[in-house]
Amino acid sequence: MAIGATHIDHIVISSNDSAATAELFARNFGIEIKRTMSRPGTRAHLEFAKLQEVVLEFAGPGDVQPYDEVKARLSGFVLAVPDIDAAVAELRAKGVDVGEPHAAVQPGAKLAGIRSGTNGVPLALIQYGALPIPAAEDA
Amino acid sequence: MLKKIHHVGVVVRSADEALMFYRDALGLAVTADRVIEDQGVRGVLLQVGGSEIELLEPTRDDTGVARFLATRGEGMHHICFESDDVDAELEGARAKGLELIDQKPREGLAGMICFLHPKSNHGVLVEFATPLPGGH
Image (cartoon, rainbow over all chains, first blue to last red; front, side, top):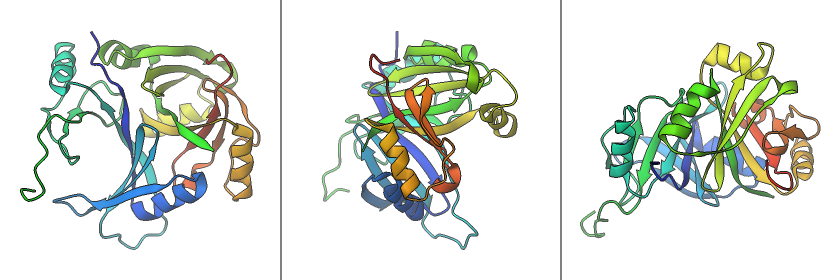
């Protein structure tokens, strides 16, 4: 039985200046930065582009420190699944170390990190629509 | 025009061992698995939605993939954008002054491919690919 991964949801590109790296990718590859945000509860600065079903997430510090050069790297990706609890149970039954699913930054989504077997790739699962989305006045 | 993410490349010590996770545990289907002699790698593509994960196992010690594995260990290696016209993408990159690894497209696991130097992308290795008719 498979976990039913439907697609790569997003790929993370970490940078010491995520805005500069996002702008460079936009210029070099003609991709459009659709959204920027500061992650709630952290000082991270995120910028997002989307190519069909896959989001490119440019992640970096909110307070960019002086640097000699902008340095970026591929730092993981996330697979979308239709049922994260079933997927986690399936992987654990196969001996894979998977974290407990928890609320993701994305509204209504749950995320679980995979901690073994990934060949050095920070890898996680995400399910959208797994949690109720708070009404605006409750957020 | 770049259409989508064709694949993410992952360097591994052993494709067979990596398949125990990506194929057997995650349940992803293998769409290609072959040794590319002139590049000194065994490449395995696994489909997930409209994109793929490419596992790269070096088969010789004198290749970029082997050097990556020796210095950084296993992990994410590159990102590949799919285009209908890899020649045009390469010329466009050249016109923008980007540093190129491949001066012209060559055949790879994903079709006709070329790599841009990471120096032009803040250290991220980027590939362009145009799949060949009939797929892999």
